Amino acid sequence: MNPAEIVVGRGRESDHVLIQVRSRMHPGSTDFWDGNWLTSPIHVRVGGFTARINAGLRVDELRDFRVALERVYAEVKGSATLSSMEHWIELTAECHPTGSLSISGTLADDPGMRNTLDFVIEGLDQTDIPPLVDALVAVEERFPILGRE
Picture 1 (cartoon, helix red, strand yellow):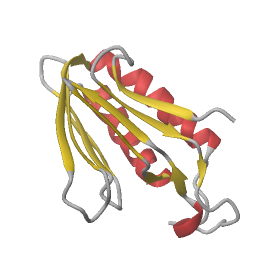
Picture 2 (cartoon, one colour; picture 1 turned 180 degrees about the vertical axis):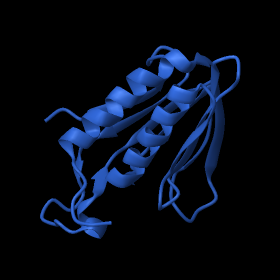
Picture 3 (cartoon, rainbow, N blue to C red; picture 1 turned 30 degrees about the vertical axis):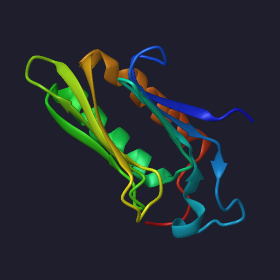
Picture 4 (tube, helix red, strand yellow; picture 1 turned 60 degrees about the vertical axis):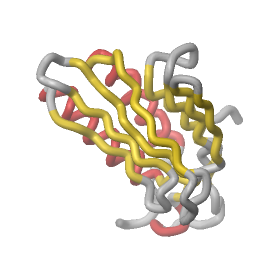
């Protein structure tokens, strides 16, 4: 099965973050805490840097990011943050009063270690939010939240 892909940016030819959601980490688990971990490698290309990490994100983290992005898009202001429980990625999309959108983030290659990449993706605007929301919705449809929060 092909991975569900979430692209933050304007595609793979420019600066971007690509999250590939491949599968559930614990396919037999149906509870909230174990069942919602996703095998989700992250690829980043910003400026002269590229990085790939074998991250594990949670469905609820991606859902919370989507909900916040929908609010930012509706209000054309504010910010939305994807913050992973294990500190793989911290990603903030901030919409400015002019409608421009900036993405800032930190990527860690191994939670608990000190190797990180801090980055900024600029040149985006609020019209870049709907494709990102659509990709996050597709992940939620494919990997619905299990158990109770």
